[in-house]
Image 1 (cartoon, helix red, strand yellow):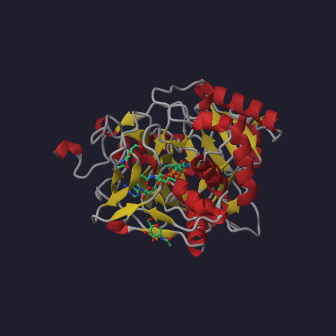
Image 2 (cartoon, helix red, strand yellow):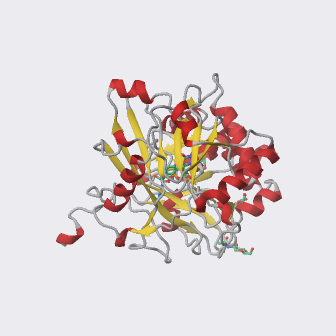
Image 3 (spheres, protein in one colour):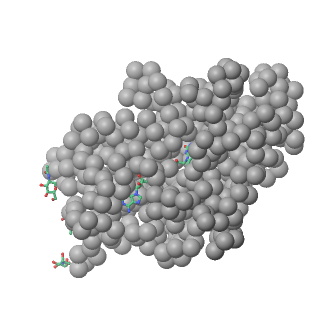
Length: 425
Ligand SMILES: Cc1cc2nc3c(=O)[nH]c(=O)nc-3n(C[C@H](O)[C@H](O)[C@H](O)COP(=O)(O)OP(=O)(O)OC[C@H]3O[C@@H](n4cnc5c(N)ncnc54)[C@H](O)[C@@H]3O)c2cc1C
Ligand SMILES: *[C@@H]1O[C@H](CO)[C@@H](O)[C@H](O)[C@H]1NC(C)=O
Ligand SMILES: *[C@@H]1O[C@H](CO)[C@@H](O)[C@H](O)[C@H]1NC(C)=O
Ligand SMILES: *[C@@H]1O[C@H](CO)[C@@H](O)[C@H](O)[C@H]1NC(C)=O
């Protein structure tokens, strides 16, 4: 590529998972004028990627993601790389019931296509024998064991990658100066920059929107992305319990929830797969995130908490009623077909999008930016571009693409997450 392009001013809106991997790969390629604008300093308080742990798995019905996840996993697990020490090869158990079986079956097929080891059906007796800490009845579970599943320290991964980008010359700007309120266009509707909450304007010739679930608040996405909230809670184990649970795998029941092995400090994360939407303040009719930063009294919905506890009683009954030491609703932007939205904007020149993590985007942190940069340069593989293109009205093409078949519920019809409680208003 001609060197001239490397000096182009690039503005990235959002320094979470997709924004940071983009900045990192731009710097790696030699771009010298890259600015990342985020409402919060890295790791952003509200980034989906800012979390104690995330699953890195290669089980996907679509071989594209099995391959990308395998590439990413090789970087996560490199003991000498930028991300060294963050990878924990715990393995994972995929629990499925009727509605999630198509996802599992398609993933097994895809693993065989790509040549990775497919997950293997294990009986409840085998589970009890191999992992004595999992001693509930597992009612109705079909359990699949995947030795290749792992978890990574997500927060530290993003932080290291951002630090590396900054050391290579990328500028990260946060606070009101980084909180983008508006995209700027010229008379030909070419995007020329952004304006932030403190009134500053930033000009660039390549503007990338990577604002995650919140992207729809600065750009009309034609209904493509639905912000979905994932309810999570942390519990604290005692030193004896850490000992007992430390060798457990990740347990992810596609219709129940997800439980991670304890961190070194004894914190265990439990995540719901009963997602929520927030249409209350929608822009162009879309669900948008409701961040705790704007609503400090927010808690988690009582009904989802109760489901999580019921689910835990199916396999780790002794932990099911523990008090939370932390709760959160964490927001991601979902595409209906679970493919990302990584594409030039169809009408605004010089504007592109890197959003639509669709509840599975984190694991690709080490590699995704390379593809985002190729998209920006117009060299992305056409077969991949076709999946990540601008596509209003797209529907789930195959049922098996959705690992979590539960239909999201709007916050407005749930109780217990607001202070003061709705019943008092
Ligand atoms: C609870 C939970 C668990 C998950 N588990 C997994 C998992 O186990 N494995 C996996 O692979 N994936 C997982 N995901 C999905 C993954 O985290 C997301 O797909 C991915 O992080 C999306 O990245 P992003 O950059 O689009 O969004 P984010 O990481 O949310 O980043 C968006 C950034 O934009 C910033 N921003 C927003 N609005 C503005 C604005 N107006 N101006 C400036 N900045 C702005 C935010 O502060 C944030 O830093 C999970 C998601 C959640 C919520
Ligand atoms: C980056 O681009 C901006 C906008 O064009 C310009 O004002 C600035 O001087 C450039 N910075 C560098 C280091 O080239
Ligand atoms: C818009 O495009 C026209 C035709 O290419 C050009 O003459 C004009 O200068 C452009 N206007 C702006 C504001 O860039
Ligand atoms: C759009 O980007 C191209 C290079 O990618 C640049 O030459 C052009 O000036 C940009 N247009 C505007 C209006 O900034």
